[in-house]
Image 1 (tube, rainbow, N blue to C red):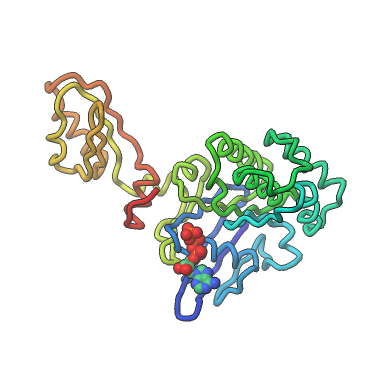
Image 2: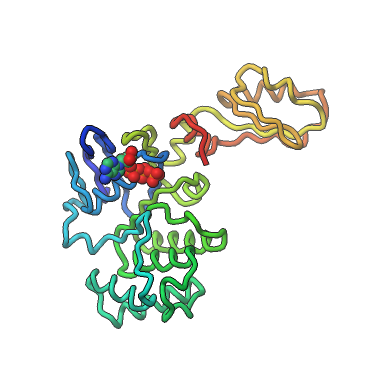
Length: 299
Ligand SMILES: Nc1ncnc2c1ncn2[C@@H]1O[C@H](COP(=O)(O)OP(=O)(O)OP(=O)(O)O)[C@@H](O)[C@H]1O
């Protein structure tokens, strides 16, 4: 395990924002850090980076406490983006990367590479304030990765990006993982987490309500989704034993069922009723799991 969060608590006065949090984040994987608004994600990130003092507990990266020396091994994309509007992209990145101990020549080489990759080479000498919000975010992402950190913390990296830029950033995140970077990111979009993460944790009121591998979390949730398309009425399934949720769709219905056995019962029940065009059993979505565990409508 590379990143260990050991019984970490953060109190603001009487209020406990993070409560005895224990997490083991595996090396060279992408870890999803989820939770509703105010669950304690950003507070955890800030403690992890040493920007906020912990009330209790310990955080280590590769067995060492994170301090001034180790902090250069970490990259951070904060939730509140913070670039200087009057600086050019080049001067901004040179400034930030020099703080990370990089030489100017290496900074410019890396920056050029990233700007090419993000299809915006012409931004090199543009002022930050001249860029759109989404494009400023790309620059902020570059500032988090330019020094090739071992551990990359991304606080809602995809918020405010159009679908093309989301894809571009996802590709970059996956490549960084391939190259051996350990990545922890928070997101309110479950689909991004499903696509990218092998491991995750869902936080509620500063405590994990779910944690582990995505596959195992889905399997152990028990309930499954069943999609049926047929040319006959399916509404009677609303009351069928074992059906937890029923949603009428254009061509049939989407069900949440208690377990796989219920799908067999439904399949038998449908025989002879008409033509079934689709009968598909699926794992629950992360969104289903999130809603059930956190207990509120989301996304
Ligand atoms: N400096 C502070 N002083 C007092 N309370 C704080 C402070 N910083 C955060 N909190 C509180 O701690 C809780 C956790 O906040 P945090 O920003 O970590 O949530 P989050 O999970 O990142 O939420 P979001 O998804 O909305 O960004 C919130 O209730 C917040 O109001």
